Amino acid sequence: MSRRGSTISMLEEHPNLAEILGVLAQLAHIRDAEIPRLADAWHNTVAVAEARDRALSPDSPLVLEALAAFEALGALFDDDIRGEAAYVTVATDVTTTALKAVRDAIAASYAKPILSRTEYTALMRAWRVVYPEATVEEPDLGPRADQVKALLALMPVLSTRCHDIEGRRLYDTIVDRSFAGETDRADARAEAFQAAVLTSRRRVWALVRRSGTEGLLRPCRNCAGPEVNERENERVMSMCLDAACALLVADTLPDETTRLLTEPVTSLIPQQRASS
Image (cartoon, rainbow, N blue to C red; front, side, top):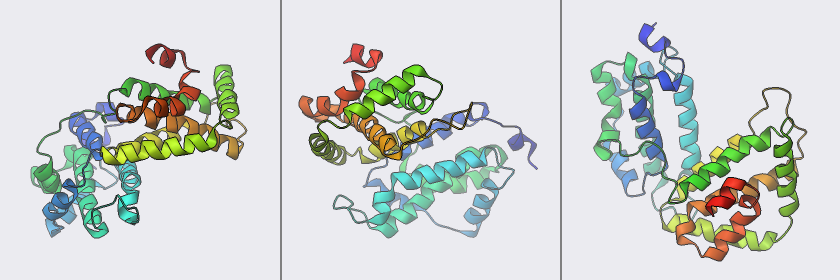
């Protein structure tokens, strides 16, 4: 067992933290033009396969977190793999190959402490052809990033409404508001998503929705969790995620569209009201 790898118990302790964050942050910002370049640069040689096996071995540091990142990557590129949407322009087999290059980069960045220089370089090679160096430390959530983050931070509060009176009040109020203007909100959501497509932010859109969903579905640490009405949960999740995604593309949307999607939720949160 690698002593150096096994002693890393959390991401903040990882000696390769900056690179891990740089790779993870880039996932939602991979552009369509970069996918064929990643695919062309990736080759599954015997050496690469052996390095991958070592990087994903049980002794590798935080290997479960690396595998969770694989799952998140699949969610971000779900539309691309399905290849059914009109806005998908890259062949699915090319995307599938490109994602193998991305997974190797994720695995290498987490496993670097236990990999030889040759193993690490082999796994990172295709990624570094396209991204020679990390340029960001967290996903770019746009000019209203603080408001997007504040909304995402609300989701765990709603998930612990069994113990949080304010969380319960917010949840019930959002449920009540979700019944008003449903058709108008559906049209506005479609307009906002089209804006995400046109501005190459659709994968960031998927990241925001995934993060918010995980926050709302997070189990309570103190009990079995609140009694869940699935339909109400869907309504609350839709309202909150639509608001967060509208803020993501607010710089390209008409103000009225942004208000329609955001105000029912943001007006309930003091820090959001102050920054609007």
